[in-house]
Image (cartoon, rainbow, N blue to C red):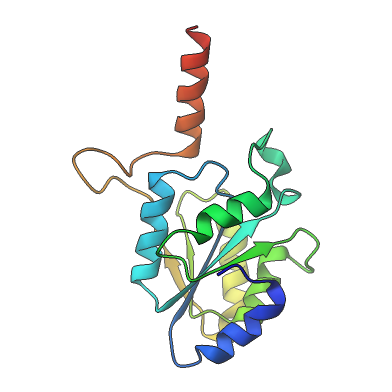
Length: 166
C-alpha cells in the first residue's frame, strides 16, 4: 500500500506488537536482485516498509527513466512489501532520519555495499532510543543460475554494450 510520511505513526500504532522493518532505495531499474533483497528483508520482519528516494535525491544517477511515482508503484506491487512511502529531499534534518523518527522501525535494513552505509549507521546509532536493531544484508547469488546476482550497474552496462554493437 502506498502511503505518505504522515501515515507512518499510524502504521507504528496499528502494528505496535509486530516487528517493523524499514529500507530505503531508488530502484530505478527494478531487477531480480532487488526482488530477492526485499524478500529477504520481509523474512526478517512482520511488517515491511520501503522508502523510495524521490527524483530530487536521485539526480546524481544521471538520467532516470522512471519517476518517483512509477518506481513506488513497481516496488509496492511486490508481494514482500507491505507499505511504500516517498523519501523526500526536503525532509529535515536528513530525509531518512525523519522517516525513521516517524515510523520507529525495529529493524533498518541496508546493503553492505551501500555507498551511504556510514551515514546510515550513524543515523541508526542516533535512533537507538527507538530500539532499532542494526541489520545489514548484501545482495548475493542464491542459486546456480545466478538469477539474483545482478545489479543495476550491470544491467546498464549490458544495455550500453548491446546498443554499441548495432
